[in-house]
Amino acid sequence: MKIRMPATRACYPSSRNEPHRLLCWIPRHELEQLAAEGRVDAKTLEYYPSGLEVRVSREGFEEFGLDLGVDPERLYEAYQALRQARALPESGYVAGAHLEEVAKRGSIRGGHILPEPEWTDGQDPRVVMGKMQ
Image (cartoon, rainbow, N blue to C red; front, side, top):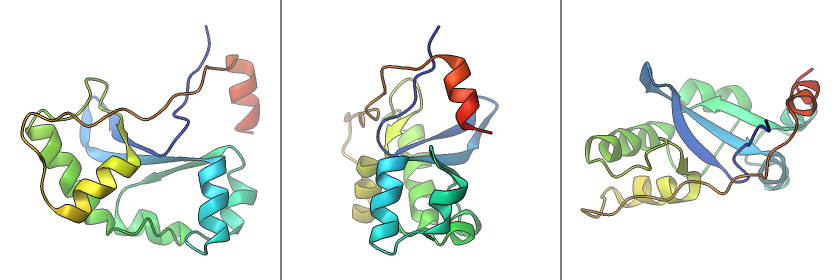
């Protein structure tokens, strides 16, 4: 069995039991780009070498000095509106860039389901867990 991770920025619920707690995964290569642009605290790379999982909230973003170009509350509201409109992928994982665009526009297209993020091919669980130490 291999563990697959989003290869691009992704937003998703914390769990099926907590659909109102939204998380955002930022893989290493995107985190490096954000740090280079001054849109995340550069120390984040040191402490989160594989990527960053952050709660989509003002407090969550402020903790890491994260700026995705859209207010985290608007991201959260857009995700919940999409969830109610059944416009999310079945997995609940949505490509971050697409969600950010919806949050900036403030509207969704009826009948349109946002795409999932790209995924890695997967790694052995021991490798993944080893990176978390």
